[in-house]
Amino acid sequence: MKPIPFPAKGLPKEHVLSLIRAFKAGDSDWRRGRLFGLVYYAGQEAEELAREAYDSCMFENALSPFDFPSLLKMETEFISMIGTLFGGNDETAGSMTSGGTESILMAVKAARDWARENRPHVKKPELVAPLTVHPAFNKAADMLGLKIVQTPVDESFRADVKSMNKAITANTIMIAATAVTYPQGVIDPIPEIGKLAVDKNLWFHVDGCLGGFMLPFLRKLGHEIPPFDFSVPGVRSLSADIHKYGYISKGVSTVLYRDRELRRHQFFVHADWPGGVYATPSLSGARPGGAIASAWAIVRYLGEEGFMRMAKQAREATRRLLEGIRATPGLFVLGDPPATVFAFGSRTIDVYRLAFQLKEKGWHLHAQHRPASLHMTISPCHEKIVEPFLADLRQAAAHLSEEIRQAPSGEAALYGMLGTMPDRKTAKALALQYLDDLYRLKE
Image 1 (cartoon, rainbow, N blue to C red):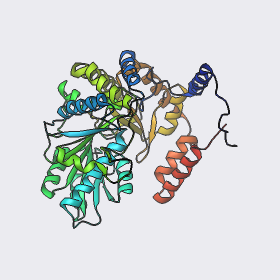
Image 2 (cartoon, rainbow, N blue to C red):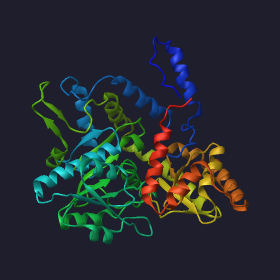
Image 3 (cartoon, rainbow, N blue to C red):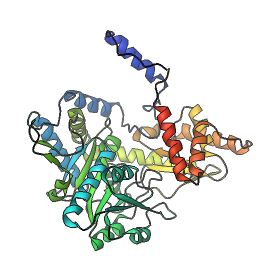
Image 4 (spheres, helix red, strand yellow):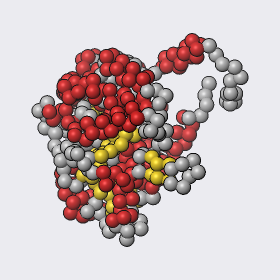
């Protein structure tokens, strides 16, 4: 397709907005709970609050706290409030970022620079983490010059601490774990890994990007949630996305440090630029003020009581869904997920084809491989769709159980092929080609 020329003349506002509405016609219907991931919805009232707070600071730029002290005040207050949520104290420090990937990147950067000062003999730093950690760790290691060593998980899909211990070498500077993992929604054994970090003087980062704004409130509701935050000795940094279970728009995340001295390793300062001293707390230079205002506003608006109410709704919907899936012939849940994220698979039917049939009924689940499974992230809005979803799931599963197996196509074929390829370099090349083709201009 030929390139689209830059517009010579502008279009009327309503015409432009009508084009956007037309583009969105094929998007997932997340407000009605038909999408299980990507968007975390707490209802119209919370949406309106987040939208208005964002609009109030839409054009302000947090690059300059001197020009916009309001953003500095909201960010520092937000970090303080969130620090206490994760077992911090008056020494706990942190920054707001654009998302979980940037938060993880900043933590890895801080660990690398900490090691340069405290372990200068390490010339080829390594990061040890279970294979279920978010790929943002792989990206951070690739960008920051670390070698990532990934270890297996146990039968419950949690990090195998013995394997992590064996993987640690004289070059290891950092270890990482997750609460909760994206693929199966479980919590790694954080206290045991924390002991490793203390014994070997390693930087330990806990990725709470997905579970961070859910687990503390489930614990307050009486659910058995193991320690995962700064209450665990050895944890030096922690990430948590408020644009997930904080129910605001993308992209706002948080990276926290046990104390300010550790956070200093995250900062970047260039003092010799003719334009002035260039100093930034995180990766981004310009930072949207609306994201900061929205995050501060939702915490003030919901408070502990509101977050607990949302957590209760989401966990109850999760419990009912788990029970229904486990009761469906041929299906099983992976591991023992304690929160609001889980995956399910099957030994008798093709789960990728199951996802396709559910998509035809208007349900959008995300496919995973190694092992083949379907992922679900549950928000409060899903409490009203549990029974309709389970009814469609049972019908689709029964149909596939009776059907003669056929060769998969589309997304099912892609995931099935990528998951079983013994040559992982070829699998990576195939995924790279798919991504390159996906982002080409189309009709």
